[in-house]
Image (cartoon, rainbow, N blue to C red):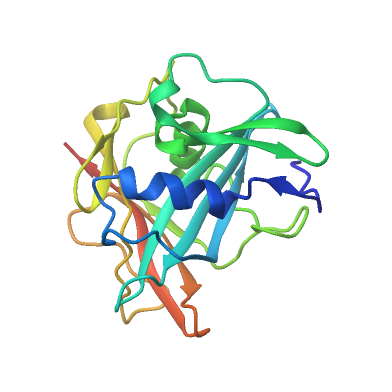
Length: 218
């Protein structure tokens, strides 16, 4: 079980994302520096206990209409070989020391555990409570077993999402710019064979919900 340490991060996750988000093709802000708040999310657990896995929702309030982004992140004690282009930044953890923070769409541990979540083989965990599951995370799947074999993610970004080829000719769609839907929990979109959804809160505390991830046939 992953342990959530109550300690400091220098720089913080939001400070790292403030510098990194404007470099993304799905960033919707203008020339000004984003003003970010943490709005929600959930965690997954690495079976080996080595990699921290978090799906963070962060809201940028620097523009007239706040924009909520989904940012999957992984936290490692050493650099991930071949993933220099996916590095969000490094930070000093008050207990664990130096941590390398990656865009998790490029990390095979996160992608494998996300597929396991969609299939129902692993649960989602609370973002902030040790050992607690997250009952607000909704998932579904109607296809063949998704056990990956030596998975090497090859993500591609567009203006809305990140697409990652997955087993059996399927494709993960990570929705980076979240669009709230009236249903809570959100239902699986038409044409998808699997999905993950959850709610979050806007900066005024209003509850919102959206599909975070879909799995589709290529």
